[in-house]
Image (cartoon, rainbow, N blue to C red; front, side, top):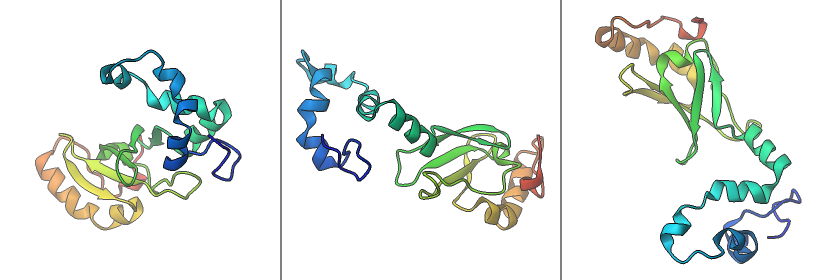
Length: 159
């Protein structure tokens, strides 16, 4: 697996991974005889090993597994077309700007959930949502969940 990708590190293009598969994956599959054994391989750990410690740490900084918001830490799901941070709406109180990932190159979607974990809204612009769609969402949520806090200006709400 050559130094493609422009940064001198491993080339993770599909074609390059396929060409050098024996080199980087072979040692992890040695002695395996069936698909069930292959399913037990932690491919994320394998690829992190190929990256090396410094590049893996840089990847963690650029694309973290979780982000800190006003109400706490929220996991980021990278399995879809766009990364999503989904949590109960209160977790995003005190946050007025949607974070961007990878040095600002990757957009993040915020999925605000009700106290029951049902979607209220998904947005790529939290500030615009708070000042626009939140008014209607807040009205509906106050009716359904009157015991919960539904601030008029959630970007200013503190913990």
